[in-house]
Image (cartoon, rainbow, N blue to C red; front, side, top):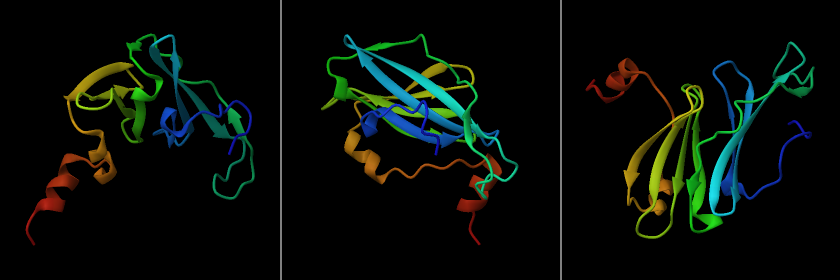
Length: 144
C-alpha cells in the first residue's frame, strides 16, 4: 500500500479500487464551506510482479479534481459507496434522512448521473456490487 500521498480521512469519504488497467485508484471526497468535491489518485507498481511484492507503489497522477460540486447542509451527508472497477464508475449518496440522493459518476468521462431520490441509505448494507456483461447476467438467471 502506498504510504505517500494517501490522505487520512473518515471512511465514508474515501474508496480504494483497481482501474481496468490494473492500477490502484484512491478516491477522496472533500467537504469545504458546504460543498463536496471529489478527487482521485492513481498508483502503479514499479515491479513486474504485482502479487509478489517485487516493486513499490508509485503515484502516477490521477483522474483529477472534479469541477462539479454539490451543495450540502452537513459534511456527513455525503458518502462514497462503491467503485465499479470494470467501468470506472463511482456510486455515492448525498443527503440524510428522508431524502438522500444516489448518483453514479463515470471517472472516465467525468459525467454524473442521478440514479434515485429518497431511497433509504440503510438499504446499502444489503447491496452487493459487482459487474457483469449482459450475456453473463442472462446466463445467471436462466433456468437449468
